[in-house]
Image 1: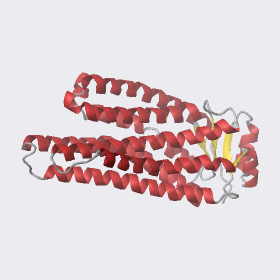
Image 2: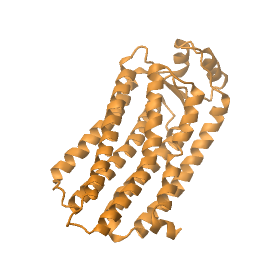
Image 3: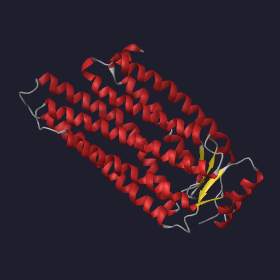
Image 4: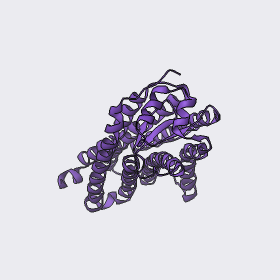
Length: 312
């Protein structure tokens, strides 16, 4: 690997940016949750509970990234600067990394549960098939355990944790080492994958499996929901069928935004560290884009829901 550098711009910019994004997300989330509670029609309240869960998950993500850890990436090196609340000790810094992964994963879990609920609701509405409580539980447990696998690997990766200056010396990253030594206030965390090569390989594998199961499952639920609504049936009127199809398309657009903005960067992060691709500056730029997901999702949700839009 070449001698990497990180512009000092990112060290000063990222904490301010992350704090700002976290605060904006908190304000928007309070607003949209209030609208969900007070402005959702009675027939949509069951789905609204899942959307509230989704919004809370998104809020927790930005609070984690924006206040608890506030990372500045050294990717593709397995190291980062830590500027948040959970940066007081080596143990708490690793806990912060675990929290970042867990927060992100819970968004994917909430999204999968929401689309699964929509699928089961339409199956009941159209009398397409009977879905038992046991089946519901099994499907959701599959999603839960598949998506939690990367978090389990991150927890175990604590065995490879290393003091960041020592890590930079072992990686012969003299420019980054000089940066850290010039400012003793910089706090970081690093993982030595040369001694534990199985960790990034395992992480890349389980992330790929988790993405395949979650994205594949969500595509299946959406496709089946639309297929059921495309079949004429006496169980529901034509007007209701067309209305539900429109609502399903809207739901997919509302949920697809955080899914795409969350999943693609994580995929790039993991394979950047595994294959040593890109630069720390590029990874931090990608993180800036990823952190916008909450604002985009919340504003789009309000604009595409008539009862919420009228209340603003």
